[in-house]
Length: 344
Image 1: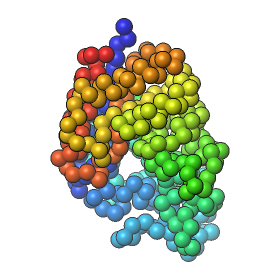
Image 2 (image 1 turned 45 degrees about the vertical axis):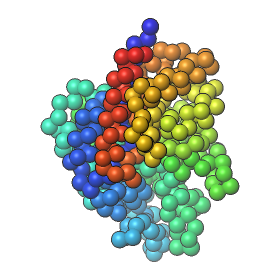
Image 3 (image 1 turned 90 degrees about the horizontal axis):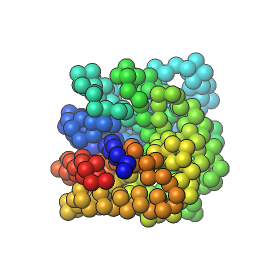
Image 4 (image 1 turned 135 degrees about the horizontal axis):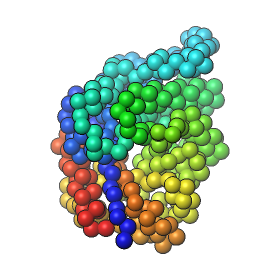
């Protein structure tokens, strides 16, 4: 019988304006894969795109959010690429103004016994979500601008590498999650990019981050073409909303099989977030996850490949929820992990 090991983690955002409560919950309920909290209610600069925009060319953050300023575009791009060519990671640091939770998480880890931690999880917003969220001076999304789309990939790579450099101090393997909610609508009439462009962008980003002590994960909280991620061999973890889209995910069982066979890991977002009712139980969630695993094993995936080490998380970030609900979701996540280990 395969011995199951369940690792708990989260997707990043919390509903708090200060990081202390979020850090308390992270270390209590996700000790195996702790992560730094994003606090979008604290400051406009902590929203998921603005948070990683610091020192990007022509991208500014104002009181009402993020915007594009094309003034001095050529010079800004030139200076930006000079920093990249010089491999100046400190230039791409994420300051406390943009991610107070990151800074406080780092300080907290310095005083924390990390014996139960297998990984430290960090995150960036994915390049397609980032580029689709900002319009140029003509009102056209940067997703349509190949020059800025490329700059965004380069800049996000540097933001990820800076985090890896920072957290290596703790001698734990690091997971960088690339959050790509925009790709949940991939294939619709509203997505102006094709599959090859997505694959090329994801390969460039993840290969630029990849190292021996780092795993690369991609999270998409919607339904998508999951082969976008299984076909990128530098992606190690696929994180999905198993609460709402388990059946849709299983349609790609053959692609997932190839992913697992090259030692890929699935992170099951088994605890609902927006749909959380409070009636969910560890038993019900464990049963649903086991059904998903059973469906994959029927497709020829070895049970030990799925059960030897399994990641579970909330279905999505918690930033839009109320504080009490966020805490209940993380407690349910931890209780589900215990149930899975005892009864699988």
